[in-house]
Amino acid sequence: MREVVLKIKRSEPSVSSVTRFDEFKVPVEEGMVVLDAVHYVEQHMDPTLGVRWNCKAARCGSCAAEINGKPKLMCKTRVDSIGEKITIEPMHAFPVVKDLVTDVSHNFEIAKKIPAFTPKKDAPSPLIMQQTDIMRSKEFRTCIECFLCQDVCHVIREHHSDYVGPKHVVKIASLDMHPIDGIDRSNFLHSGGGLGFCDITKCCQEICPEGIRITDDAIIPEKERVVDQVFDPIGRLVHRIRGSRWQ
Image (cartoon, rainbow, N blue to C red; front, top):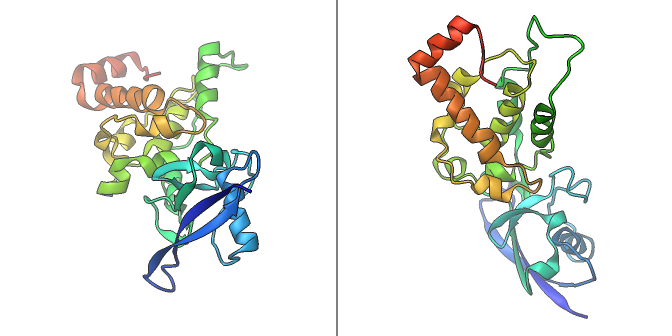
């Protein structure tokens, strides 16, 4: 039977500062994904291996890791698409808990700071939404919170700035672009969200397992809004006179 070699990064910072790579030979079955191979190791070779997973259907985002240096979902990555040797590491942008398990709780703290959806006082009832608004909102809400976009973002990974990251810009865009929402979040993105640190490399968009156009449909429009609301005095004056907000 054909075998594949898994090279898995092992560490447990709470116990020791030592890190190492362990190699395992795993028999390949038809349709096997990387998570299947990791489960084989856990069940037959080393039950101490730390790995986070839940649905095994690319819906929960729990099994996010770096496979041969690229952030991916283990449950969505076919073994046949990689080769005979597979290197698996935890996401580099987050603190490691154990082996392939990382602490992503910082993302939930950021989410608490985002101004919540607040309907306009004069919102029509019943609301009749345009198809464009429906499709735009639907795209953003397909996010499975795997945090791969956060992991691949070089601003977060290398500079550790105050940038909230692409996942949270998507969330903010989903609120800002709702026709009933009445909150202006441009000041939050400018002063507390660090949106200016993003230089639009589109790496987050390329890595998204749901195919969300993160840069094109969320980051760039939000950047334009910040410029309009924060840096353009004429634009601010026009919005103030009209009592309007950016859509």
